[in-house]
Image (cartoon, protein in one colour):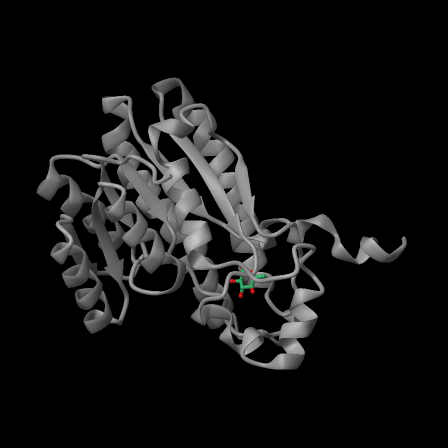
Length: 260
Ligand code: BGC
């Protein structure tokens, strides 16, 4: 059953591809007005928006780099200006970064991953909260990863950003809880999107990946998007301050299925 988000005003960051695209589509299909930003894929973003508008949705697209604090704040204020407020922020924009062992990592690249995956989420959350706190209403959902808890060789910047984002969720949930604002994380596992095509596009690396998932298959982005729509809806009214894993039990130490 689809969640009911009728009349809610939402911002989805990084909404033009991968998980973000499906989240945008699902929120719109559930009745929300949806604004989403893209970084570089203007045509793709516009075609998603056209598609949704054809189905009667109220949608706006914005070009912005979430790691730029001014642009991130402007995105939130654009939504507030256009629709008179913001009810839902889905902090989804993120990149894996390039594989590099810590002692070989390029520092600019290392910092860039943290800036997009953690600073960007903070900038958007901060701006949304400035509106939500006095209204005593709103939901912020941060897309983390199973790597908020599972270390990942070659991706130290990514794991640090996601673990930090998880703690940001908990801390802001504590701060904003007395104002009735929910803040939570959704941690996807291996979801089949362009971000990890290098893994699922190759039979050997795919086999290795599937061995890490007790459920035996990768997830679909629609499975994440449906969960997001539920979590940001009033049906999830008492869920705040924690991470919901959508990962086929990937955090469940699959290696222990054969001894230990
Ligand atoms: C990453 C994917 C990866 C998955 C499982 C996600 O956070 O973005 O590239 O496949 O974690 O390792």
